[in-house]
Image 1 (cartoon, rainbow, N blue to C red):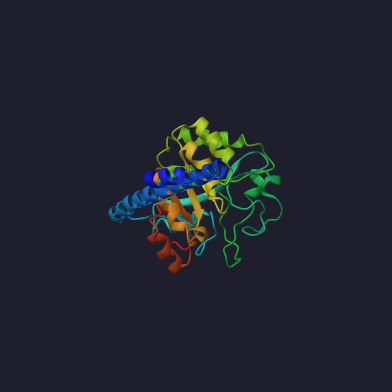
Image 2: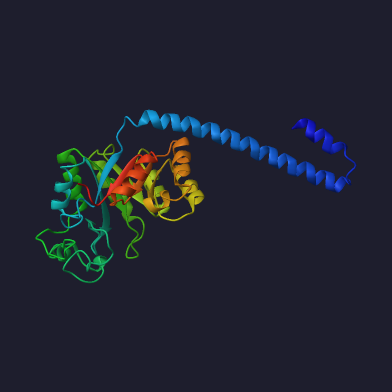
Length: 289
């Protein structure tokens, strides 16, 4: 390479063109070295992945077992515990700022109620009954965050808690959740995740040891990394993105910098096998069986 540079610099080009050729060659040389380094690092990561196959991939029950029972219900979570020790649930707030276990902003899909959840007080919300996927109304009631914390403590299980953005409240409602969780000393059993980086950054300030995940369902990998790395968060990636041609590469790169990778929500068995082969750390599914 250096001999080539010397030859180029001695050819009778106009100085302007000779300088540009020199710069282009340097850039090509740097790109070449980068690919050599990347190939070396990926070969190391592949070797590590072979060793890590002895450690099973974590299976997370997404909203419990919604194929069998109403999602985010006590029955759903109890059924999921027959197959895994990790669950995932969502948190929203009622009108009187009571944190409840609920995914949607509205009530129609999963309850016999109507309208925005945040327009009801907790006592009013408690009167609604949850529906199963077959639209059958059960006697299950909407759970509180406090009840779920007690459920985690009683059964000694782990949970991933997703925080939802609510226009009804300022972002400081996250503070109340952190305070409740810390009071029960369960920092080793919970992970916080959200699509909203501000929530996770706020939790990091309040609880430096908190385990965090940034949810990601778009193709902007670089922005995901830029947001996650400073707060030492993992990434929860929609499995569709990992099925693309570069999915395996991003899993390796995230692992290379010490970031865990969670794939969600996989209910197709063939897709499950493909995602498992990429070496992700955890998989979320609705079909826990």
